[in-house]
Image (cartoon, rainbow, N blue to C red; front, side, top):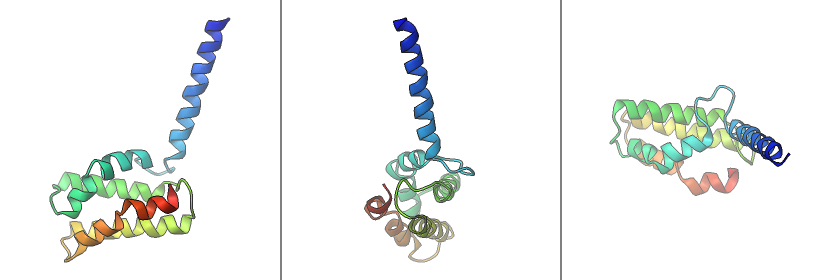
Length: 121
């Protein structure tokens, strides 16, 4: 009896955790917000793009991540604010990748963790 209860509890935990992870990812999104934060921001990919040190593959991945972020729902806060912040990130990243003057600094500013986390985390 105890073994069956443990198995059932384990399965329930897997289902619940899977649903939490799915809630972090928009319907048409390639990456969850958690993946983007780990690889793109904490992992330094966005900073590398902002500094002009990323290769073409890294630039492509960064854009895919930022576009996915815009498709993901915010953990909290308004959709309007989320759209504004993610659009600023995407626009600054595109300009940086295109080599526009001062775009790297705009990307660094748009990628300010605290500004977004205060409202959406």
